Image 1 (cartoon, protein in one colour):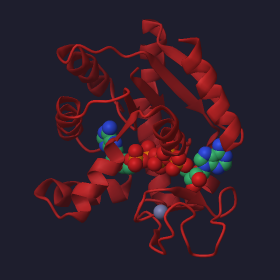
Image 2 (cartoon, protein in one colour):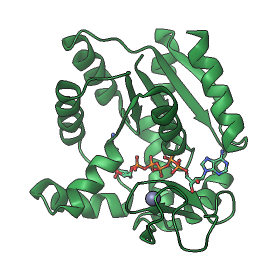
Image 3 (cartoon, helix red, strand yellow):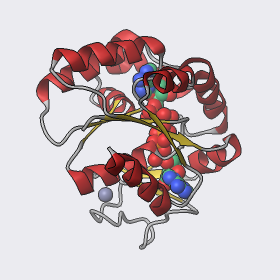
Image 4 (cartoon, protein in one colour):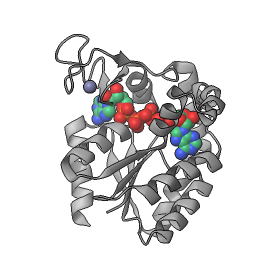
Length: 215
Ligand code: AP5
Ligand code: ZN
């Protein structure tokens, strides 16, 4: 089963994708994570996209489609979760073509609906484990022990360079201009389901499970 988690920055896509990986053995394909990895390993592409990401703008379709194509050709397993991809109509068309090239289909697109006010609090309170990638939040998901990841015990807890109010404003603008048209695109294809992303993490997980189990 291949699915897309669609929603604005801070909607909870990464949080829910990790749960699906743990519970269903699916493979999370986050273009944001791939781009951050390219940055931290200092590749040419990483250097090129760093400033764009920090400003909150979208990198080119060509780059992210290339990243996804590599993964689709390389990985196998219990289905893909596309997290933060596609983000433009061009990327959505490319994903359809790439999946059919490897003999796969898209089963479900889950829109995680959250209002803008909640997003600011979500983004400015977020921190992540640099070792295992677990996502935390100062108020809604703090670590059990101060300064230590609950999952792997690492003390390498980080905040993202683009998690500030100014970049978030640009990220939201990019979302509404370029990504939100995908809601209509997938609705028209009959692939779209919507869940309430404002609910608590476990409740959102249950809504997603209900969508996936319905088939
Ligand atoms: P990316 O890394 O994809 O960031 P994003 O879309 O802005 O999404 P986030 O990771 O910020 O949010 P999320 O929905 O995963 O929320 P999370 O689960 O962490 O992209 C970064 C940049 O890379 C882009 O700006 C762009 O430059 C570039 N890029 C990436 N993909 C691209 C593409 N396809 N095309 C072009 N450019 C691309 O949750 C947020 C916080 O809220 C956490 O602290 C979490 O603990 C908390 N939380 C989660 N769920 C709940 C809940 N239900 N209740 C309370 N708190 C919650
Ligand atoms: Zn960890």
